[in-house]
Image 1 (tube, rainbow, N blue to C red):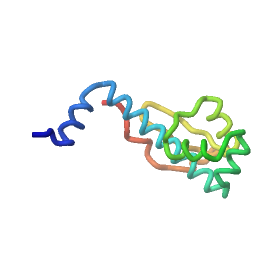
Image 2 (cartoon, rainbow, N blue to C red; image 1 turned 90 degrees about the vertical axis):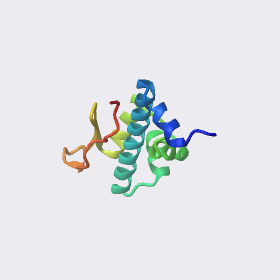
Image 3 (cartoon, rainbow, N blue to C red; image 1 turned 60 degrees about the horizontal axis):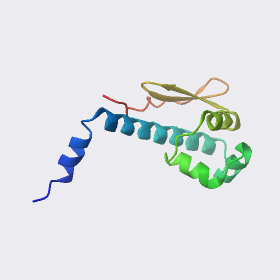
Length: 114
């Protein structure tokens, strides 16, 4: 008899490493979602943003989908191009535009290690 997926999944998430990995993936997704939201607020395409920061459209698509963890250099370039700041804390990510107004009042991401 096979073990149900729910049991396998629950067992995997008992390890601190698995919880940390999940929290990092959730943070990458949340950061990408906020980049996409800000890019769309400014009416930019992925290609335009990529050209502005010296990247490729496919790299922007991966980042917005949460498929990559950006470097500090990339985060800085995105911040300048999108005129936004991201505040990253243990509780999650918050977004503010450069003028200091909160552009996404959404509660910081809930994914974090237990």
